[in-house]
Image (tube, rainbow, N blue to C red; front, side, top):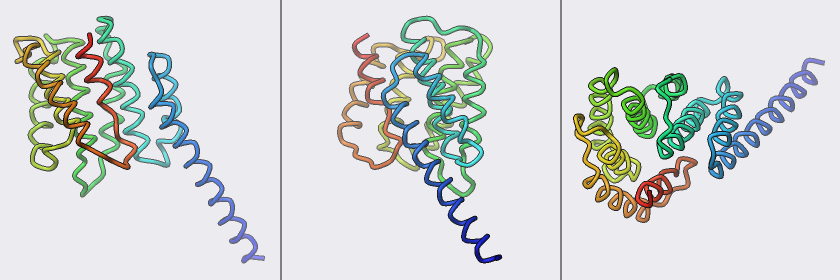
Length: 204
């Protein structure tokens, strides 16, 4: 009887794991095809269901909110309300893995602090500038050719207020350099975003 119960439990856990993997994959696809704030909100909602069982889901839930706010920034509609940015920051911090280099969460944290700076430069400018610089410095030592590192530098130059080192002309040049990095990089990872962001800013 005990053997039967064990077998049934194994089968149940296997089915649950497969279902979660399928759900995760479908959410990745939804995120990759999202274009509007509503699309990215649905992506966030989808990953939020999975965070208890998948640390990677924390990263993608944070990325969904980041991309949602990115749409607003490009439309010059980013609200001073920082709720989404704060929640995304909380989730990306939860995605950090102990004894891991955490390159991609570190970069996303830098992007989120750029959004925080843009939402309220007087309140968060100095603090966010330091966090962004720390994130860039850390990743430069671990993965200097990461295309999202190049994109973070480019977006900072392009979008940051001048009092915090922003320089749109320099940002345009760095965006072009980041595109070269994306073209030179191949990956099998689910984390492959960023090229479209650079293209949108260059065509703005």
